[in-house]
Amino acid sequence: MLVEKPNNQISIIIPTYNESQNILNILKSIKENLPKNISAQAIVVDDNSPDGTGKIVDDYLKNLKKITNYTIEVIHRKTKDGLGSAILKGIQQATGDTIVVMDSDFSHPPQIIPKLVESIKKYQYDIAVASRYIKGGKIENWSAKRKLISKFATLIAKKGLGINTKDPMSGFFAFKKNILNGLNIDAIGYKILLEILVKTKNVSITEIPYTFQDRELGSSKLSMKTVFDYYKSVWKLYRYGKPEEEKEKRKSVKFLYKAARFYTVGASGFVVNYLISLLFAGGISDMWYLHANVIGIIASISTNFILNKAWTFGDRDFRIKKTMSQYGKFALFSSLGALVQLGMVYFLVDSAEISYPLALILAVATAAFGNFVLNKKFTFKE
Ligand code: GDD
Image (cartoon, rainbow, N blue to C red; front, side, top):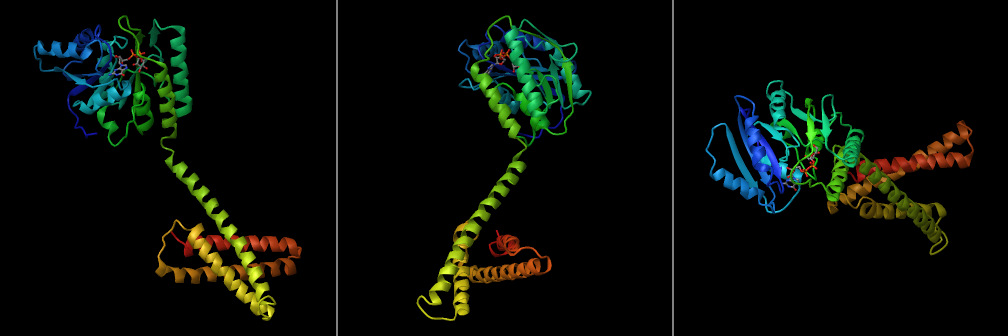
């Protein structure tokens, strides 16, 4: 989105779908209720309404006497892509530094526009919401069912997303265009205000009471899909801003995953060590058992190294050249682990008088953990 310089213009976004009976009247009423000393750009965003709403405005514009402080534009979209995305399209075309969003069916009275604009231009709020749910605001002619749906959706937004605005579901609001700079707006479904409230940080918000009057002409486009889209967008917004948390979670899962592989490799090393030591001390040769054990240890360190390099840390930088120095570090840490283990067992059994089996568990666990951490950090570093 372009960075807008402050100007003395407002852009009023009016999404339409099958509003042939309302559109010209609302455009006229908006003109009559414009704030003083300001120029306004009305942008009708029509989704190829089958009742010809878009064309009606086009024809009206052909015969309209041009006036300087009020222009009307129409954006024709090919298909019905939803209210939120229609509003976003309008915002992208807007040249005013202040945006007003409203329905075209008179449920949002144009008489409120000056109050919204005053909140932004004079009182310098970032967002002004025309609100049904603060003192002085109300809804007329909605069925009990529709009221319930609206209240429930509002409750979910407030509790689930931690929104303090009393009417975050309002489709009637104004804001400084530049608060959207750098934001990625998805505009799923109807509730673009909710998305703006969640995604903008440190913005000032005010609410202006108004009476929502259900439309007299045409019909609401609210459908099951709209409701479904609403939950989808709430879920997306709920996850918004949590990527850091997710990253941390992924990091700890990755750590556990690597540790599991490292110890599986360690267990395989134990088997290799055991079998090779036996093999050389009596199996294929009659080597002195300590010499055979040294061969067993070297063999297990080597197989452990190969498996860890290829499997446990297989996702990390692989360069043949580095392999020998890695092998050296791995052998060093393994030997260090063995020394720590021996030292700990000796101390725990002899000085702390802990039983040998328990001392062994503690020492093996400490050495194994240290081994893993050191090799992860230094031998196979990312
Ligand atoms: N371009 C376009 N595309 N316009 C649409 C679409 C669409 O897919 N769907 C609806 N509109 C237009 C309508 O023509 C109307 O001007 C406005 O968006 C609102 O649509 P309605 O279907 O009449 O909505 P509603 O009255 O049920 O709900 C309205 O009021 C609620 C309370 O303030 C909406 O503004 C809601 O967003 C709002 O929460």
